[in-house]
Image (cartoon, rainbow, N blue to C red; front, side, top):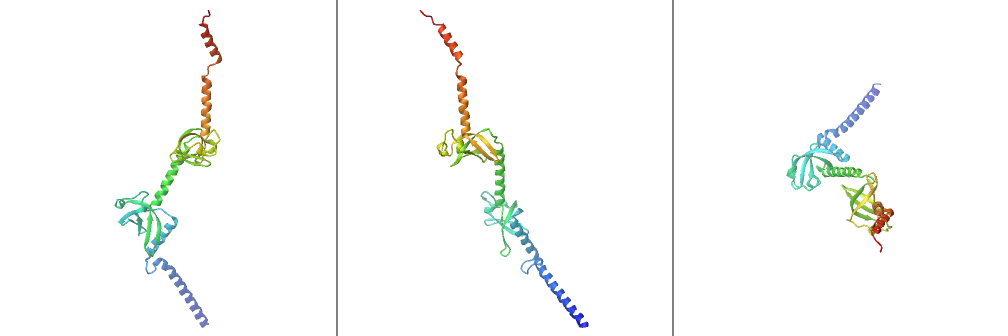
Length: 250
């Protein structure tokens, strides 16, 4: 009986030691690996998460080095190449010392101690978003039925794109270019030419124009003006009568 209890006790002790070993193994990931301390491992773990998610990080430029600047992320020294500081060309990196900027992690390698950051992509995205918003706003103000003027920016087999300003373009379908039948937009238009057209559709920022409708409306208006300027028959007769009344026959 005593031997059985001893065997059980030994087995329980062995199981406890095995569990303790596993716990120690798990704790190593938080205590460092002998080469890196805990704080360093946790910092790089966060940095890799930032890289995967593309998170925007606020940092302060703390140093100037050859071909770039330095900023800390989670206490780790990060390098921002001069080409990735701004959208435009940076002449003097010294002007950036102490400046608060926003960056993304684009390269992270703990073993090589390499952390590369970039602000340029964020600025490009924001600039593109601002241009898009400005374009949408400008396009929304162009009313159907209004007359617009623009420059032909490109000719395609199916029509012509007209630059209306503020990044907004309108399409004149080939069927809407001329009052006469044409096989190609090049028969009636050329790139760079200034044209006037009528807005016939504006949906989701896509603007359709018609030069033909405008020409037809102008033709009808001119014909009406001609008709309005033709003297009435009664008026002509009266005028002739008045004219003849002053003539004496011998």
